[in-house]
Length: 542
Ligand code: ADP
Image (cartoon, rainbow, N blue to C red; front, side, top):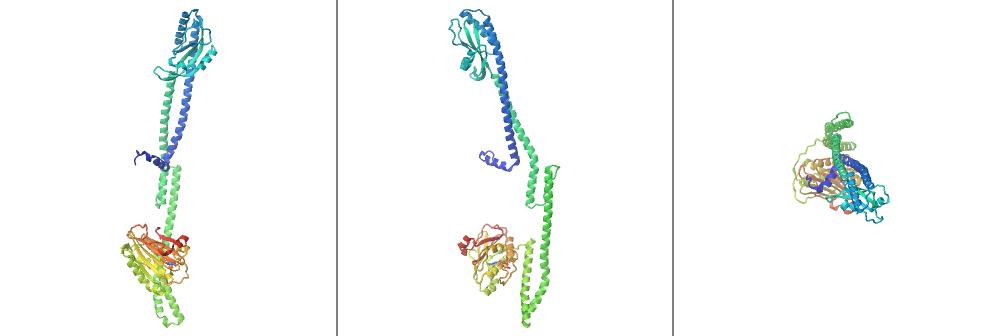
């Protein structure tokens, strides 16, 4: 994990957002409280600014009023009559304004439109570069209403070239001999502005600290709540994956404790029910296996007696002879059924041990075909073995694989309607496959779905020569699965069937693909297109 790689940040944050309840809660809390704090901050800052301005304005108006009154007093008390006297009179009025007000920025202009008088002193201004801030509008108001005071917010230039906010207050003075003059006093609001900046800075700083604190507190609080929930989630996950003994620690009496208690109660009842079911199914399995075992001894006796009668059937009257024959075949079927039941009950009990050894599947297939040749000949069926490629050994249990082959080839002969049967063995680096292809009756789609079910037969009335217990393919499927292999079928009514067994070459190998095709190459494309044929996989799904 490299946090310096900023391009991966959005993806990381999205993942964190989706996976962490804590992160999501803290982010939302910080964002909302940050917004609220910003709103309050702006409100406080604006109202403090307003208040500072209003109080300074009040001061300024008082100040300028006082200064103007003092100057007018000096002017009124004078009896100056010529230009020099008026000039010096205005000078002393100016110093009295400076002395009375807290400002040194003063401008005095003669109100325009009066008789030009030689005694009238010159306009002057200490506004410097800021003289232009005295707007025509303000001057108009001052000129229009003598005896009243007007103000205006302005920006004043400072000596060092900067700018500060300020206020200009204007009023009229009446100078003896010279006539009416406008007086403007400029006040610097720099100090008030500095105070406002200070307040804003403090607000910002306090706001940031507050947000951080809120984030930290939320983190801790959410942690308290989320940790038990996380424990509950993990525990339920373990329970779901089959670990029935896990429980959530129960602490306190709050809602989390209630959750833990009810969860644990649920787990308890689940565990006891599963145990009950497991016990029950164990009892059933044992029953089936016990019954099969118990039946074996009397059956052997019946078998011996039956064989004896069968051997002597020629000496019996015809009806009795037929009964002896019937007894013989049914006892044979009974024995077969019993051994199949015993086998399947072993799989159910999970007590199946594989005895693997390096085995050549081609040899095994030859054995199986040889074993069934007489049955095939009785049906007029031709059995072919096709085995291209190298004949490498596979780690399998030969007894079980022979049993699968016997079942598949036997079924093909039974349902192949005397048409040729092709058994092919093929292999690749990781797997070996055996296909049994017949061109007989085939099966419908619904039949294919049941073909591996226990005791299922497509048509129980079909004439059977061997087997016929309906357990053959179920056992074959278990045999394939215990090897980690697949048993799959393709079939189409009237076109025959193809059963394919695929096994990993090594004992614990995993299968990804089979060396032989299914549906078989000669299945015809039309059957696949119309969906008349379907592949059903038993055991480990392909
Ligand atoms: P059984 O002992 O009846 O052969 P299986 O489990 O071996 O039991 O087969 C179940 C049923 O599947 C058979 O009864 C038959 O109807 C059907 N079946 C199996 N193989 C074929 C096949 N090659 N062609 C058509 N139907 C088949």
